[in-house]
Image 1 (cartoon, helix red, strand yellow):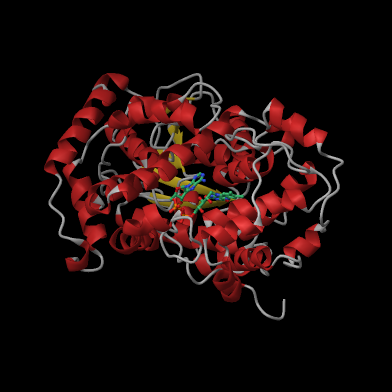
Image 2 (cartoon, helix red, strand yellow):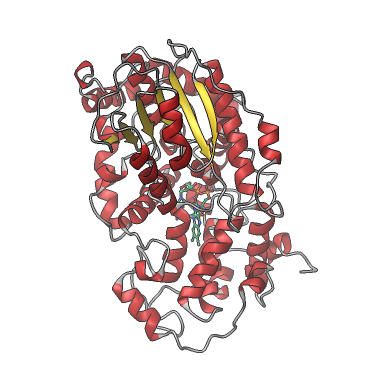
Length: 510
Ligand SMILES: Cc1cc2nc3c(=O)[nH]c(=O)nc-3n(C[C@H](O)[C@H](O)[C@H](O)COP(=O)(O)OP(=O)(O)OC[C@H]3O[C@@H](n4cnc5c(N)ncnc54)[C@H](O)[C@@H]3O)c2cc1C
C-alpha cells in the first residue's frame, strides 16, 4: 500500500458527510414518486462522491506487510460477507488501491458448502443468485469476477500466487467459521502479499465502536451515536476500472452451479424474497414509500405490514446497512418517530450483535451468558416443565400452542418470522425442553436452518437474548425461566390479534 499518496481519510469522510447533507437533492413526497426512484438517486449520490477515500479506521492490516507487492499483476478483493458491488467499502478500497498502483482489479468468492443440516437450497440459492448479479456488474465495470470452488484456505493462496496478485482486501465477519477461513488464508498467503480487512458491514467499524464486550444496548448506544457523524457518510462510486487484466476470469455457468449445489433441497426458496442487490433496493424503496410511517406504532403487531423485511439482503450483504440508514434518514422526514425507532434497530441493535460475537467466543452457548443468567438457569434446571417436546415435534410445529405452531410453520415455509413473535417463539422453546442448553441448540438449529436471514450475529444474539438474558436484565423469578424475562400467550393476546395470525399461518390439518 502506498500510504503516502493518500490524504487522511477521516477528515475527508467527515467533510464529505457534511457536504452530502447540504447538497442532497430535494425529494418529492412518496406518493408522487414513480417506482424505481431510489436506484437513480443512489447513482447520482455516488457519482457526486467519486474518488472519496475510505476512512482508514475501517481498515486493519492483518499481515506483517502492509505494502502491495511490487511487480504484481492485480489487486484482489476476497468477497466473503458483503456480496455487493456498490456501497461496499472493501471493494471501494480495493479499487482505490489498484488504481493507485495502475493495476487490474479482481473479485473472488470461495464457494464452500459445509456438510451440515444448515446448508439448504434456501440459503445457497439466494446467495448464488445474488452473486450472479455481482458478476454481471463486475463485468460491466471491467472487474474480473472469479468463483472459486473450495474452502478459502485451500484455494485462495494458490489463486493469488498463480495470478501474481499483489494484495488481498477482504471484508469482516465476527463469526467463528469465517474467522477460521481468514486464519487459514493468512497462514498460507505468500508473506510479501498483504491482507487488509475492511469492515464493510457495520456503519461504525466493529473495532472502532468499542474495544470490548458491551453489556447492553444502553452501553454501546452513546459510543455508536458519537461516531455516526464520522462514519455514516455517502459512498463513492465503484467505477469502470481503468486497467484491464490480460488474463481474464473464467466465465461462470450459474445454472450448472445451482444444479450441482450439494444442499438440502427440501428447504426451498421463498417467493417473497428475490435475491440480489436490485431486489433489496426495491424492498427498501417500498419500505420508505409505504411501511416506514407505520414502523413506530405498529412494529410489534405481527399482523401489520410495518417492518422493513430487509434482514435477508443485509445478512447476505446484498444491501449495505449504511445505505439503508442514509436513505431512511433522508427520505423519511415525514415519518416522525419511525425514523429514530428504525435506526435504533438497524444501527444500535444490529451493530451490538457483531460486538457480542466479536468479543465473546461463546456467542452461541449458555456459557456465553452473564454469570447471573447462568446461575438462575442452573437454579431452575430441574424445575418441572409444563410440556416437553422433542426437536422433531418442534420442527414439525406439533405443539399445543397454535400461535407457536403458526410462527414455526411460517418460518419453515416462508423463511421468515416476525420480530416480535421470534422472542415469544424462542422463549417457549426454553419452557418446553428439558434444559437451557437443549433449548438454545434447538432454537439456533431451527432459526439457522429455516430463516432466510439465519446464521447471522443477529440470530445468535436473538436466541441468546430470549433464552440466556444477553443484553437484558434480571426479572422477577419464576419457574424454569428463573430471572430470565418471561413471555406468555396472554401477553400476546394483549398486544395483537392472535386469532387472526393463527388463522393466517396455522394450517388446519397441522
Ligand atoms: C429468537 C430471535 C432470532 C432472531 N434471528 C435473527 C436472524 O437470524 N437474523 C436476523 O437478521 N435477525 C434476527 N433476529 C432479530 C430481528 O428479529 C430481525 O432482524 C428482524 O425481525 C428482521 O426483520 P426486518 O428486516 O423486517 O426488521 P426491521 O424491524 O425492519 O429492522 C431493520 C433491520 O434492523 C436489524 N434488526 C432489527 N431488529 C433487530 C434485533 N432485535 N437485533 C439485531 N438487529 C435487529 C435487522 O438487520 C433488520 O433487518 C432474531 C431475533 C430473535 C428474538
